[in-house]
Length: 298
Image (spheres, one colour):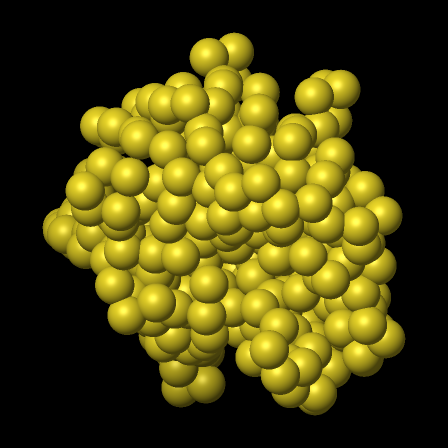
């Protein structure tokens, strides 16, 4: 009897626990439980600092409008008494003297320090062997130039493989002649002249033609055989040269010297404009045709 009562009590206890648990589950199902979501503030926009785009430290200055005198080519200093030059124009041309002949070429530069030079025409004078050899190396090194470096008053052109290079010093008329850029300050040496057949030719070997534009309005110089003089006026880039008079010597050597003299003197009388670029002077006629080219004397 006692055991039967114990079993009944255990049964009632288990039934009570089951009913209690069922009520708890129902309570949980009926409850409206909203999940807690942690809201984060949107990120604060960060101020963007302006990025300054500067020029690379290796970018070289432009060459346009600069003039240079060669100091050495491929490690060899300039032959004594020669003047080897390069004048970089604003129009993409480079002109100058190889020490014997004058030349024209085109050039293009690209950042940071690249350069290409396309050689053009040159005069065809014959000079002494050391001068000719130097000129050949100079023209080849110009054509091979791949990079350039300007350091103060020095310009260096170097080929892509480093096998050729030219070192220049900055040229101004003040550096070359001790004077300024006025016509009356310089003794000009003829490097080419119009021969009257629509061609500009170089000066004969062993002849020197000069021009000095005096402050008194008188042009004087040597035509290779005879000395000459004429009146002139110059203003801005305009020039007018009067009738040329000369001494009356007759020279036999070198062959063609008298024909050269006549053609040169006739050419300068046609000059209507002049232009000084670096250490060079050009005289042109009313149509822009080149009549005479000069380099400032050392």
